[in-house]
Image (cartoon, rainbow, N blue to C red; front, side):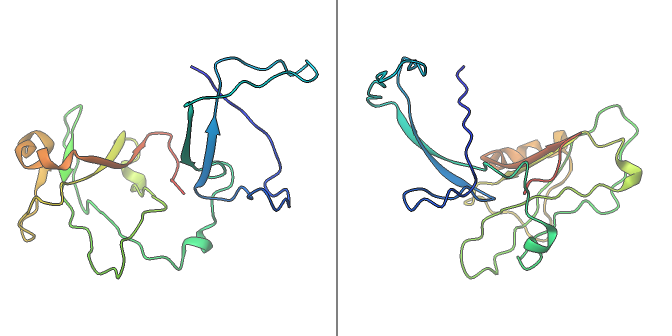
Length: 175
């Protein structure tokens, strides 16, 4: 595995460059098969050929998350397991289908995720995963699946299409 590290100011005030901002930044990169000798004057950097790409990467999100105030004016959606009593078995996997709101005038994008766990249950919750269901599958909105995962697995098969977000013990909010 190769790791690339760079260091520069967040905003270098260069018209030919882009400031590094909070949230997602588009990084364009190319790489060759040999490393240039940084101590050699006039050392060649060989052409990368087809080894190039771009990625959307949160370069500052982990060290400089936006404040709660910056997110206060955005719409939000809450998915809750209200009054759920955790069984006394060693391991429990509970699954619940939630209907996402459709009242938005344009396609919404999730830009943050905050996990709220009742302080009395923090020692019981190990991880949570949120998946997106296949949009062609129709559920009865008055009777959405909500049970131990093994009991409703056949109803959940279409919901392992895309992983939306996840959280585990020790994890922080995603912003």
